[in-house]
Image (cartoon, rainbow, N blue to C red; front, side):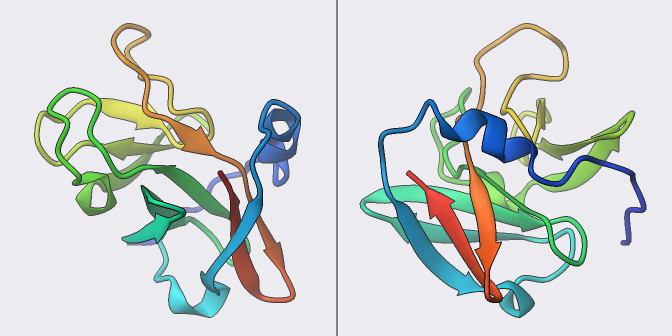
Length: 126
């Protein structure tokens, strides 16, 4: 599946100031398949990574907020308007990848993490 959406690269930079963590190199950008989730263990935290175009990667908690299961990397990537989403594979809740907010406007949010690509390497701030 290929999604063609206009979005604002660097949206995660606005969120960056609220994190006191560190940037962790995870993998090469080319190692991530388009619109397919991959799980990574970052400093003891399971994170799901989603590459949505040639240079944009989103990172959210791999833990489903409703069930507590580590399954979000197996979710379905989609969109609502111009925002990319991930749908939980268990209960089908939809979350925005850029913020982790539930698309329904109610319920528990999915934790999201700022990402960046430096010299072809995907880094996540945790």
